[in-house]
Structure formats: C-alpha cells, structure tokens
Image (cartoon, rainbow, N blue to C red):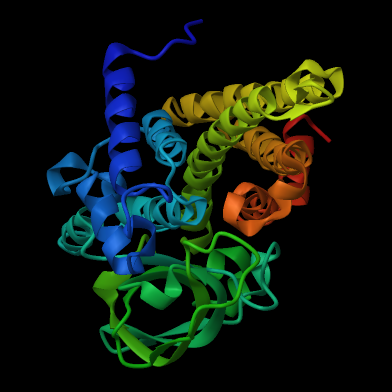
Amino acid sequence: MDFGLTAEQSKRLDELTGAVRDRLATDGPPGSADRSPRQRWRVAAELGLTGLCLPAEHGGGGLGALDTALCLEATTRGGAETGLAFAIAAHLLACGVPIRDFAAEPTRAELLTGLASGELIAANAMTEDEAGSDVSRLTTTAVRDGDGWRLDGVKSFVSNGPIADLLVTYAVTDPAAGHLGITAFAVPRHSPGVTVSPPLAKLGLHGCQAGRVEFAGCRIPDRYRLGDEGSGSAVFQHSMGWERACLFGIYLGAMDEQLHRAIRHAGQRRQFGRSIGDFQAVSHRIAGMKQRLEAARLLLYRACWALDRDTDDRIAAAALSKVAVSEAAVANGLDAIHLFGAAGYLVPTGIEAGLRDAIPAGIFSGTTEIQRDIIAREVGL
C-alpha cells in the first residue's frame, strides 16, 4: 500500500499551487480578488482547472478522479476562494462528466471543447423547491416535440446559474415510469424559453453564484439529450459519484491553509508572557484539527482510488469520504475561530469565511443523512 505521490503528481501540484497563489489567491496581486466572475474564470481556464477530468483530445487534462481531486485541493491550498473552487468543481463534475460520458457525437466534442477551454461555463440544474434529497419528486417535464423536446419547469439552487452558458438539467419524460422516467439534457443558456434569476444571497461560497432557472416552453434539439431516454437517474448518480469523491478536495486544501494559519498564529500570539501554543488547551485543539484533516484526506483519496478502479465499494467509499470531510471542515472552522479569538470573528481576517464555506458541505451533493443511509445500506442494513 503506497501513500506517496508520484514525481509527476508532485510536480503538477507544486506548479498548480504556485500558479494559483500568483494569479487567483484572495491575498494575491492587487485587484486579483476583485475581478469579475468571468475574468476569474478565464484565469482558472488558463491554469487548466476548467478541464481537469475532461478528455485531452478536446483540450482537457485527461485526469482520473484522484488526480482531479488533488488539483482541486491544490487550488484552495494555493489560496483561491473556496466558492470559486466549488464553482469549478460543479462545472467539471456535475456537468462535464455526464457530457463526457453520455453525450452523443458531434455534440459531445462541441460541448467538451468549450467546457475545457472555459469558453462555456456549465451549471447543474437538478434541484427543485420540492425535490432536493427526494429526486423522485421532480416536476420539470420534457415532452417530445417533433425532432426535439419541449422543457417546462423551475429549478432552484443552480450553482453557476447566473453566469452559465450551458445548463445540465433533468426532466420527467415518462411520469408513469418513476425513476426510469427521467431524462438528462444539456441546455444552451440562450435557448428560447430559458430564464435565469439574479444571484441568490448566500451565507458562504460567495465565489460561486447560484440562482433559479425557469424553462417555459424551452425547445431543444434531441442532440442535446444525455444518454438514453429514461436514463436520467443513472446519468445523475454517475455524476454524483464523481462529485462526492472529488469535489471535497477543495475542503482539504482549505483546511490545510487554515491549519497553517492557526499554527502560525499560535506561535506568534502571546498571552500571560508566552505564546498561546505553549498552552495545552490550544495545542490540543490544533492537534484535533490536524487529526480530522488527515483522516478526511485518507478517506477522500481512497474514494477517488476506488472510483478510478471502478471497485464494488466505490459508492460507500464516496459516502464515507463526504461525511468525514464535510464534518471535519465545520469542526475545524469552529476551532479556527476559537483559536483566533475576537479576530477570528472579524470578516477582514478571513477566518470566519472558512466556517461559512464549510456549512453547506453537509447539504449539497446529497446531505449527510443521505450519505449515512447509503453507508447503512452498503453494510447490509
């Protein structure tokens, strides 16, 4: 069992971390954090982030799950805003992966080229007001219309929605067939009948704009269908397998950077005549942060390893990883604020942002409760 990275992986990650720190970090060059979302997306594309796991023949990196997660981890370790990294991961994993694996040619090549280059920004439009964890309650419909489809319905909490060029969405095509009556589509943003709301006001992940999307008599050609008619549930679960395994690499990188700041602060901050790191109450809190981070890291790497090898336990491995990383991110975020004291509660220090960005990790991509259901089912309950 080898826990080390290859020389190629180490070189890639060192170069990417340095490039992100130079060009995308929130504490980088003047104005770097103040760019428009499109400008920051362009920089991310130039660094290869928008095509990590997309095919090399279409301009992507051709990376597997583990290497994709490692690069996402390097992005936040390099100081990129967690919300931006989340936006990139949603673009890649919830949208790029189903297009990569289920779109028909020549649409597949057309879309993947745009996604990899960053010319197209993708948004995942699955969730509805009454269909979150229970995806069987989708009300958006797609009806055959000549050689295409007519979509009607409203999607909520669409990550990247306000700036997206392409919407990967799911609609009921056969109400009587249950989960076998859902079909997946890639919908160009400017198709007639598509309306996207302004960005929603959120607690955290501010670098990823989210909004509502309405399809009102939106007609799209059949070539934008992903997979067979009625296979939408399978397409969605496939994309979630990648998202649950890889996306949470962004929290590993963010927790790494958070821990380094906490250690530095504990060594520099003095109270009662000595550094606060000399006090066991502080050093043990930091030890706990380190323990959670490394345990979560091992589970995430294992989940990606299982996905790359298509092992039988890949679904349970991803569920275990998601729970561990999301809970560690929240706990470490709270600990970081405690360690920094009043300064940790102030927005300019950036410490409180770690907690705000961590809270939704237990909600998106399947709630923690859903992951525990998966784990219980996999152990035979």
